[in-house]
Image 1: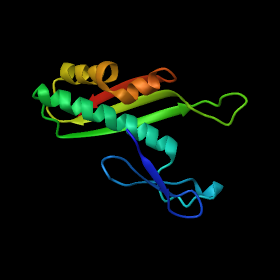
Image 2: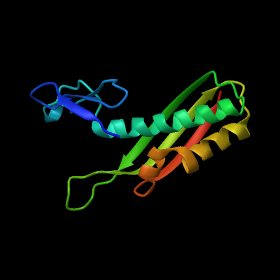
Image 3: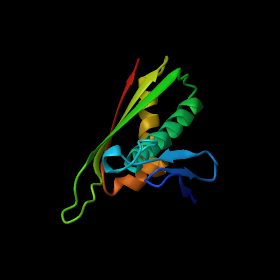
Image 4: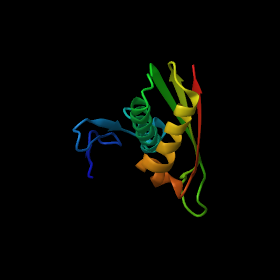
Length: 139
């Protein structure tokens, strides 16, 4: 896999794209000279994690013949500074799934567990450095 970033302005605004060809805007906060014209890199990491597990869960539920009317995912991350550096990686991440539909609770729970433990490559990427938890609700 490969992605490319092209600088858009003389500050920190980039347009990134991968094999899909879909552009993604990346920028820095205004307080460090950015223009707030795109997502922050650390936000993109959480978005990627949420997107990865969302696809898995929806595919699994579809195979289980569960009709998901809607799905919203909130991913929150707690960062911790590494002593002697300016690095603040995620150490705790929670993924909250909010489903809408007539869904069997046990099937939803199983789909999430399968994604977290077997299918989601983004989860595997974070597992060694962050504690990942998940919660869900069906409305």
